[in-house]
Amino acid sequence: RKFYLMPRQYRLQSIPQENELINESTPAFKKISSVVEEKPLNQVEPVWKSHLYQMQLKAPKPKRIVCNTILENRPSIYGKEFHGAISREEAEKLVMKDEGCYLTRESERLPGTYALTFRFNNAPKNYRLYYDTDEKMHFVGEKQFETIHDLVADGLITLYVDTYAKDYIDQMAANVTQNLIGNEPDRARDENDNEGVKKPSFKASEVAKEHNFKTQTYYGPHWCDYCKNFMWGLKSQGVRCQDCSYDCHQQCSKAVPNQCSPDKKLVKRVFGVDLTTLIKAHNLKRPQVIDSCIREIEERGMEVEGLYRIPGYADDITYLQNCIDKDGTLPDITQNGVKDVNVLCGLLKLYLRMLPIPIITFDLYDKFIEAIKQENAFEQIKSLSSAIKELPPAHYETLKYLCRHLQRLSKYKDKNLMSSENLGIVFGPTLMRPPDHLALMAVGNIYFQKRIIQLLIEEQDVLFDN
Image (cartoon, rainbow, N blue to C red; front, top):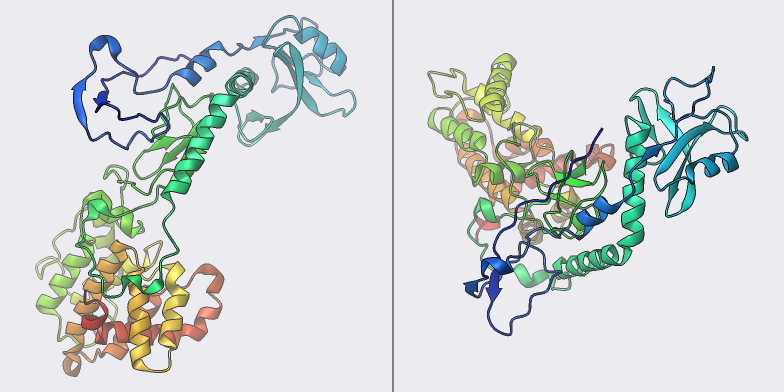
């Protein structure tokens, strides 16, 4: 398999004002604000730094040392680079012909095990070889490869870059660490600093969201979106955000700010999707399914007995869920489309129940429980108000909207029999799902969960008042 490399495009960069210094370690997304002119064409600088790319090109290429001897017991997973049970000294002598020469062999000391020998930097290297029979992949470390040739090629690149670009990479890592320290929030502020401060108006595009990074293999040249350096190697060169496709080195991912802007094309569902991810992808204040269901429920169901307690027909709820996940928008949920308002209540509760992070987030679960355990109502409200302010913006807006709806609903309790206490019983486990490690202890918190939701409903005008 051949690995073709081509540099990315270049574009003009702007010149800062006189005496303004440019720091090469500054992340690419920090813009220079004062611009007086563009560089002439003969002074164009690359957006993507090519040093590591050039280093990869200079790395030795794999050269197989073919065994011309007919071997009866050659493992089927190896090709002509397999030389049978030869000594380490003999293998090292064979690969010293040229840089990148390699072979595989059976260990003389440990029969039934296999080793890889190749030459790098004018010295032999020996590694224990492994094979994943399920995946049909060769490996010596974490990375797995279909062929020995690819494994050696990646190893030579990694060794070459680590050897001859060590200072460059160390400086790159130091810049990342410095930026990481600079991005840390100031946690030394007094806890009461937020009291009396008006909560800023909500904009989905400005909500901070962590990236959802996973190891990624790039089949072609790729550059880090953060430091702009080449991502070297043939496999698992970096990480990619599963929500917005942001690509970067593993070490750079630690310093990337929480500025994930999910792509609608990547957020293919509505149910079971992280709340912040969903509202940023669709640029909404709250999920459409919540707004639409509540609007329809309030229009025709406020006096229906047992609202949110009596379940709707499960098949109808599942049908609506599938329609929403498939198309990304709500079907007709008016009286013409959905006759039973309990189906809409069930759909809303299902959405809340399927959130991977509940409305009252896992990290604040204990704080809410401790708040409701305060001795008097004043302290309870004060502590709850403090805890609510720590919710992520998307969770705060959704909880506020839902509690105002439930308060309006509770005013019809003489007809629908759904008092704030009954609503607390229904919504407590959904809005306050405990962390997994507290699941067994959560039984003892059922009463407190009910009281928290009940108080959120009854005192929503105070608790959510800016």
